[in-house]
Image 1: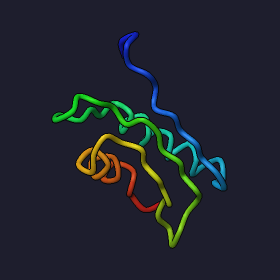
Image 2: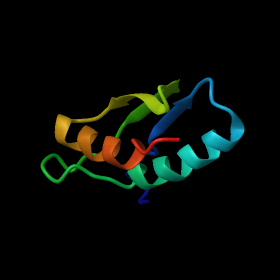
Image 3: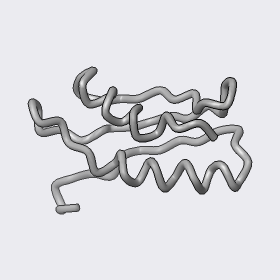
Image 4: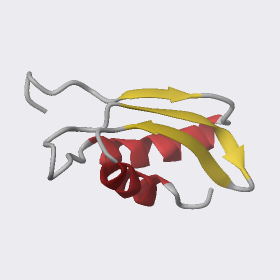
Length: 78
């Protein structure tokens, strides 16, 4: 990561430690994504626990395309 890039802000609520660790690995991968159209990273994600075995996430990105890429990485069932 260069000095001009800021780290993606991550907020995780209501997850047990083991799931939180697995989720962080996925978020590290998602944090490296950049929008090919706007040359922007993911700005932030908030994880509000699990819903029916899936992470309940709210993403802040420059566009829907980048959000879909991030969701595809993090969406695996836990």
